[in-house]
Length: 561
Image 1 (cartoon, rainbow, N blue to C red):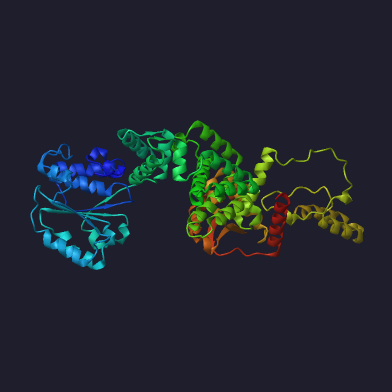
Image 2 (image 1 turned 45 degrees about the horizontal axis):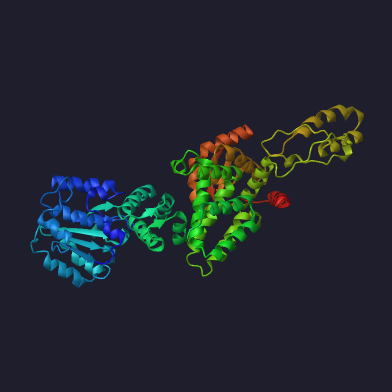
């Protein structure tokens, strides 16, 4: 016999060898031991997670005359026939190529015959979602009430394509993706059985690249053996899989965090020269950025504990140097890129564009980019990258040189300070005092004081400042809430505070309503005033003062960009 692929050679022969699906194994073994065998089963889940292997193992177990703890003994006539792969009691059908009504009619005609060796005749229909509508209809009655000696097992990767009438007639078992750690242990065992020498780093790369599929992992290991022979190093596995060294990915992330677009583009060109798969690298970069996010917001995560200390130290340093807004915006851009890059004829251009966008938020005017730019400036100021001018004692300037200030320029939640210069109201009163009779001097002087401290009622434009102050208050205290509401806007209306939710973000209306009490508490801390917070669908009314404030904000940001 010729060479047998690893995933076929090491197909599970006992339930103990079926790794990663313990919840299904326990249920099936209990049914075998109690004799409560159903007439129809449905195995659903991603590819390579053990659906067909479980179906074959279960079919042998229910026909075994001397099952031990639910496992086939391998010694009885039924087990020997299974080993020889000529058991007439187990019929496998590929629905991808046998999906017509005639194929199902053929099954209906043959189910009446008794099994040759064991107690049951088992029909395994693989890729069951490929059956035609007519074939499903032809199968319904037989599937619901088959002869007592017949068991149907349907396997599918796309359960949503199966009619509800089929689903309701089967016992459903959902197979899940297998964790990288479980795949690692199983691969190590299999490779030891064949006498192959793999570095742990190579096995780890294969396990992660399999994306939760054991069959994919064994197939990748087969390819590595063909490429390298019996000795496979981590670098060999990287060459076969087309992935990059973690240090290269980490260096690329450094460029994104520092906003060095030139360095990032140079790294892109190096990837093209080396023939690396841009899609694979983009996925690795997104996974690395996610690790940085976990290190920043959840440093005690179990996923991080499994990383080498050297890698963990580097992630911690990157998380410290990067703002949360910059990391989240980079992840959003990379996640959109992952779907776009698969259908684009020039994926490298798509990747380079995304890299420049992450490095240069000043090219965009959306709220996420503006917040990112502000957070980058704050990060630079905190780290001393931007030097601040040293305060020097200055001579007191004459009062006439002090610029005039408007009380309406102050945020509505701040107390109005006593002016150390003459306000417009005081100037007007002084002029009136000079022109008024002498007997009216004192009353006029008394009215000057309240005029100086009089606050104008909040207008639509002024409430924009209160909303920005609210965001600034929430961001360090409740980052998740800040990330959820930062794209919205608010307006004070007397004792009410209305949060306006654009149509494009309508799902956030429920978030505002749910957190109305929390927002009200933050507003009270800022202003000392009780507000009733509510959400309204639409855009906040704008006036000339708001537009001026926005222009000032953009102009200030452009000075630092």
